[in-house]
Length: 92
Image (cartoon, rainbow, N blue to C red; front, side, top):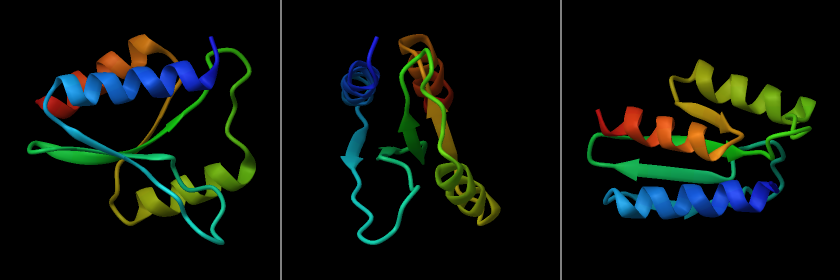
């Protein structure tokens, strides 16, 4: 499975559950997550990667760590099953 399929599934699941999702662009800033997922119950940033071999680059790991240190939720999702678990957790 390619990363695009995981990302498309995330978009579908967020919308199915009444959430909003945005594709983010961070001009002149590398490593930030690709998506912002929002529900009335909460919000979080998501980076999607392909299941096999889709590792975070060092600059992504650094940026995610900085964001988490500020109290933001940042998740990296590799599979459709992880997308489902993430959506269910966010709806609680």
